[in-house]
Image 1 (spheres, rainbow, N blue to C red):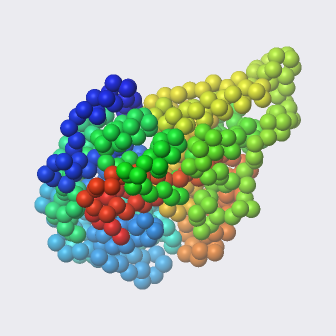
Image 2 (cartoon, one colour; image 1 turned 120 degrees about the vertical axis):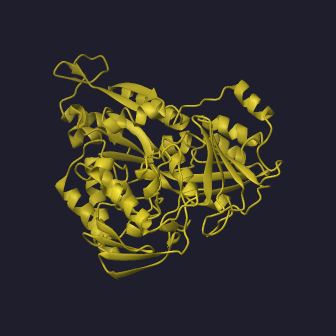
Image 3 (tube, rainbow, N blue to C red; image 1 turned 180 degrees about the vertical axis):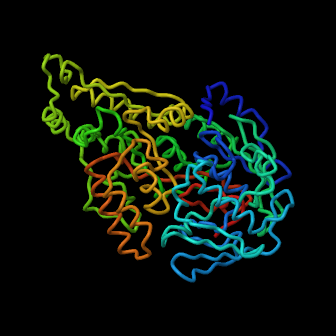
Length: 511
């Protein structure tokens, strides 16, 4: 996840490099990405490049289609004899890309490590309802749940790893070996990941022989490299001005759709200044969503009103966060004891000025511009606001994930179910609850939402939780993200995009 910012001269140099695309004898494509992968162990991925690359190298029991349906992948079928039991039948003759067999033992090993607290998998909360996984025979795996778990199938696309390799000491984070349609050739950290077709994949080798994922951290530089012909595919995140220009260029195909992500402000509820929900409400009233979404992002996203995506079956337009109201925010600050006692334009209380730090990462210029705009609004309301902009690794790993922030602007992707955006983030002690939020009523509602199989009951649970969250505001959701992909029209395959941003649909495997 190195910050790789291209200068103008670097862009020119890129344009002079020999193309790695269709001019070669092999069917090869080059995909532009914004950050480098942190790891290629699918159990430990935290960033989009890692998850999208791992999806090519590995396969899960199921594959999630663009319509968000779980369809067979390594498992050819499954049955659900009772609400807490799933039995999966693996395909015959499965192998990893190194030729070693893939059996039920590898599935058991993958999920046993995922739920082990000592392994510290980022997505562990998605799998904690799994009480046990056992190999009935080499091709049959039985999952026993500690309670009914509605989203389970949506999460079983995680890549299966080789028990023998991992226990033998192989570092699959750097040298991944999976059973997916591609396998790794090389990884030049901070620069590119090169993959080639895996002809042992159960569906056969993909139509594309080689995929190079090239890391270009700056959105506009990545778009310019695409226009110059050095990239075949780019996708979100992209700058709005580049999106509009590329949409109008008939050299390129595009897929533009509602995404499965949000941009949001993460309030650190452990911070003394932000511990009171009313303080978070006051700060939220200083967020000009309309300008951020429609001017800075130029309408490629949609103004959000709650934690539930508008495209979700659980959405309700009756749930609403605070809206932009500077005077109302100042009045609420005054109610909480903050006033301009020194007549210097800065609110203060007990001799201390009202000061807060807004943070985000440098790779996304739209987020940087949003934070700088918020800083100006905060200051106009009498708040001393500092903008802290750092590279993605520092911002995410060393700052937000250690709860060192006050108000951080970032995003979540791959929200295939309301559970994915709420359970781990808002339950007490949840693994991605970086703001330290805790409310026993929300805990109970989110547990109910994942434990019942009745869609109406799930909807009620998530809407009730979202209503509380819209008032207590551990998150302020600025926008529901759109998703954009642009591609060269001379690609050797029919392109199928997915709002998740995964890439199997550009290597010849459509659903």
